[in-house]
Structure formats: structure tokens, C-alpha cells
Length: 280
Image (tube, rainbow, N blue to C red):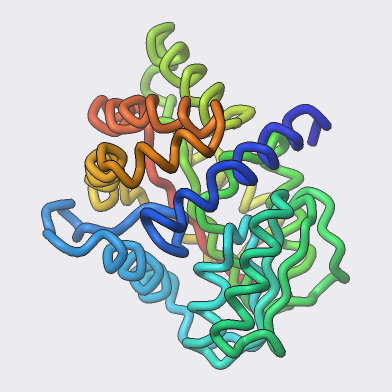
């Protein structure tokens, strides 16, 4: 990961995580609104439902030691640790996030079996075969080398363990390449959200076969999560959010002003919400 990109991602989440928690809570990811995307529900419940639906889809019913790659402020890590009575480890590029996640673990009486580290997902500071569940919920899009990222996830996974990766993708290109307009749309998203690039779900599946993961499954849940961006946009136009944005810095303000990029990306079928799971 280049130093510049590393710093951009770190600074973006250092600046924006406090405001996100204030407005949205601990889960820094999409919500689940039913297979057709039409279920009406509380926005935070939708985010918890996404975690539960992912566990059901992947068939994971228990875990002893969980790695949350791109852990944010510990939303998934602590939820899964509590659900499975497990040990959890989270990594993030943001010192602000790691500190807040550690505080939240203590507040939830999970400090003894949770730890949060500032670490690069492409060079993880863990031994081979360390975790029986590697969980990556919306962090793959930040990785400049998607193959190296998945290789690292595979390396630290115990034999028989499960990898669950959920990430932003662009549409498959086997039928037609991306148009110039689509490429410009993606470039705008990359610039605002500190992404090097995204790839399609079939490309991720190809990498997974090379690892080699077993029992690979993929799914596209774009329809189920697309309403999330309308809800985020609605929540951004409140006095509380406006005040928070003023104190969060330009990168956070720019991200808020560009929320429509993601909504339009889903509407035109360009942005996809890709799922992949498999066992070592």
C-alpha cells in the first residue's frame, strides 16, 4: 500500500468516524433491507440484520477466534465476539478507530477477549493459521492489491476456517467493458472515498480459486442494500449532522456532499455489493 493512499485512508477515517458514530452508531457498513430491498426498518437494525444475514448465508454458526479486517470502531468485532462467546481481533489503518474500538470493548465488558490494532491488511502482523473466521465487511475496496489482500486473509485463516468477504464491486464486464462515462463515475467515487480501484465479483472469485479456497460461494446483494444510501442522505440533512460536519474537516464534508455518487452507482447497475465466502 502506497504511503500516500495509506495516509489518505487513515486521515479520512480519523476525521469522519466520530461523526458517523454520533449519527449512525457503531456499525460502519450497509444495512440489509430484504432480498427485494423494500423492507422498512430502523437504520441501525438494518445494519445488524446485514451481519446476521451474512452469517446465515455463509453457514457460520460458531467461531473461537475472529479477525475483523477493516474493523472500524469495532462494530462487527464486538457483535460477533458477543454472539459466539469468542475472542476477536480487529485491524484498521486509523489510530482514532482503534482507540475508540478498544474503549467500546471495555464498555461492553469484552476487553479481556478483544484487541484492536493499527495494521495494514496486506501485511498482517499475525502468524499463519491464527483465526477460524476471517471477516472483511466493506474494506476490500480500499486495498490496492486485491490478490495480496486475499492471500493474507487466506494465510492467517486456520485450516477448516471460513473467510467471509463483502466489498464494493463494479458490474461484471464479461458481456461489455466499462464505458467512459462509467469509468468517470468510478473515478469520482475513488477520489471521494479514498479507493485505489474496485473490481468485479467474478474477478474476486477467480482470485479465491487461486488461493485456493474451498467451497467458494458468491452472491450479489446490491438490491438488498441499495436503499442504505437514501437513508444516509436523509440523515445527513439534520442540524446535528450539519454541525458535526463543520468540525470534521473537508474530507468528511466532501464525502457527505458526494453521497449521491453511490446512490446513482447502484441505480445504474454500476456499483455492486459483492459477497464471497469459502473455507481453507
